Length: 447
Image (cartoon, rainbow, N blue to C red):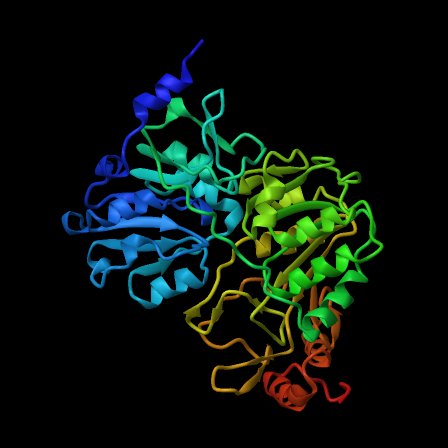
């Protein structure tokens, strides 16, 4: 019988020794979200003066990496984000970071076919008796990333929960170069957006009415999806299922309220399936060795063909703004990058293909800028430079606190009329004028 503990001791080293694998010009991968390394990142930052043109990849970054903290960090390291959090935006603003556009469901294939990984380093759970380490909270694309890597360094964190999952959620000690033991930092936490506002609750109430018993849920992150989750937990709904990209606290609340059984799921019956998770300690404790939840690679969770097989699939996501044609921007404010496509388009398409499925894009009707000015989130045309996350041909339901509209099958003038009907009343005349200029407002339209 193979002695995995002996192999572990053989590969155990210090962070300073492990990061000597990194050379100038290398592509280094930090993994995803809460799996980003801590001790290894610090050790790599200490080698700054001897390294140049080191390209580092990550995504949904939860803290500022040490390699990015020095004033001249950009002379040595370049950060490349697959999906932007507030931290990633700060790195981009500082001139050290850049965004890589993706459809999240395709990310594992990017690693198989398109990208180079010289050194991969990430946080994992402690090793089990069979020599395996769990990716904990981020199955995502990590198996394909590690398959591509020339060198692999694992950073063990005893605080990481063990997540049960499909193939692609663990790695064996035989397949790594080095193991290091850090200081077991607490896992970074992501709140649910605070208490729902009156607008959040109004939007959530409209959506929850559309959810049938036995529906399969996908929730995005943010105030409105969180409010929908809270309202579902307090509802009379039953036998719900979960198949989602990101597992958030709202799912724990719904499950603990007895609403989730997964009994009616066409696939993975009884299991809550997710690609990665981030939230509070409540979520991490719930996931740890819980057979009710199942981590899976993102080319399974987000595959439109998989989602389409799940009856009554309900997809709920946020947006920054939408235009009168029904184009949805969930990524940028003009050329200023904010988030990323992620899996939103995958789920918008998959939900509509599901028997009984529905896709909801929710947003407040207005946004207040830093200067106090109030602007409509429904606009005649998107601001130049804005990213079209969901093309008009794919958009189904748009929801604000003023109502819900289904854009499927509608002509341009019908879309304009319906969208203006759920805009804030203070902006409706302005939007009608904009629609007239665009040639999408009929003389017989309601005013």
